[in-house]
Length: 135
Image (cartoon, rainbow, N blue to C red; front, side, top):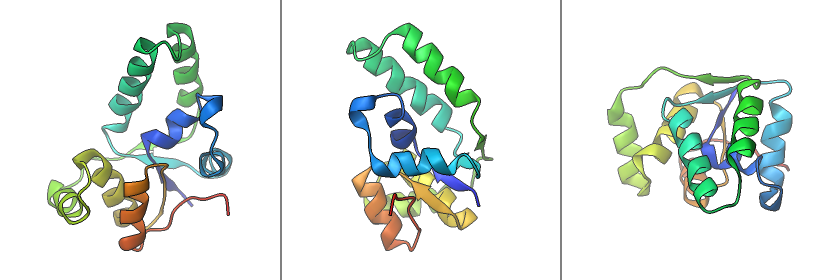
């Protein structure tokens, strides 16, 4: 069954010092399932990579190779939703619009959410959205 993949989980795969069991569970799940992402995911991942390059945590070459690796994974961008549901979730849980988009997608598709963001995970639980975890 598909699941929603947020940028925090995907980015952690690029940094061994950010190893997290829940991120590993999402990686393993991609062997059998596809991940769903909102339209902004593509930009968010690349922006984070650019920021970490500027902080000298990675190089242009490492960014290139990581993006090539991501492109081979079963990650499907979904159509843009009606924004009223995202605003509702963002306001109710004090999330950014970006994070609320992940939650809205998981809720709409009735699938689990892979996130390392604590506020987003708390909101998901409050909304009855399952989380991809190692346990």
